[in-house]
Image 1 (spheres, rainbow, N blue to C red):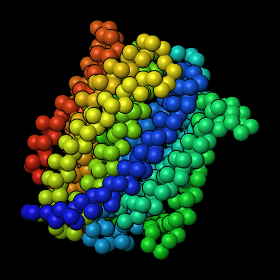
Image 2 (image 1 turned 60 degrees about the horizontal axis):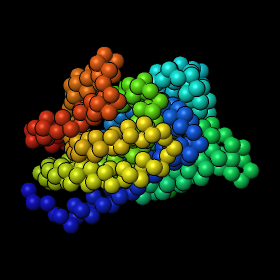
Image 3 (image 1 turned 45 degrees about the vertical axis):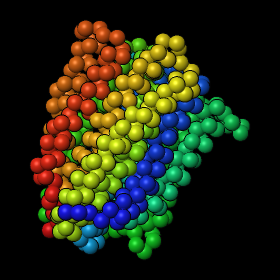
Length: 447
């Protein structure tokens, strides 16, 4: 089926641009933390980078729950069923709230134990534990605001959602500067300042989400409806959420394992990996935005019963993902010289960082193609199990065992181990394309 190119690109830009900017703003917080703390001391930067892996794992749970809500929600929104979409909103609020409470409790009760997962260096453990005790309060609020923002994206309110995130991020960065360096008469708190800045900005983000939701066209929770959810809808939600949660945890814990492996290869390798991760997350914002938009666009068409158009849109988006991948490769190589000299690193750590950036430039092709195709198109049509299968085989069956073997048995140099951690995304592209062409994702999930 021929697509209406003008309409397609208008919808893609309308959705992807604010979501990309929102993703970029969120990634900018980590970049600001790394750059500002990197100007203070290498250990401060490294400890915070490792401590934030706890929030990264929490986000895997929150992302899976919100994504399942978005998969179903986009199709019901395309169908015009607002009542069911409101039920989905109540469902994800309940689950995300439970997750947020659990992670908050872990950060407050056992921060040192959490840090020991990532490093055996006592100074890093002490800095990271102090960070988690303060930042843990922000983890309590994150789940609620992410539910609001997810619903805004699929109900044609992507721009207000991006504005809220931008306000929170800008506040976070400004408070980072004030509290890390002790500007404007504030105490010089370093890593603890970064944690306090994050917590304050999350409070503001949630307040803005609640305030905006009072608009007539927005979804907002009704306490009396939390316990009145259809069994069929819960079953449909579980069918989408469980594979997404499994895939999200496989991916998130896998990336955390990569960080832990590099963290045990010495402080120089850990510091270089921390900076490389920040750059990776910044450049991945583009494919993240297009991937999220792809899921909404495809889901809207399939939910409305326009299966042929949804399929054609999916093919077009898959093709676009390759262009995004090669553009991202170029961006990584272009920013490498500037990145290496922007933070205070030892000479050895600078060498590691240069090598990691070159390896990452190849990795970006696979990351972009897979994000748009799997997390966008396939998930948009409800084919959520494939992501879990591919991660179990490629990440947990190949990349992680090889990295562990290289790091702790064969004692390979850090760059060789880092290359092992980048194998999974590039290696599974052929498998992803085979799955895509089976078109199992072309289905209407609504009742």
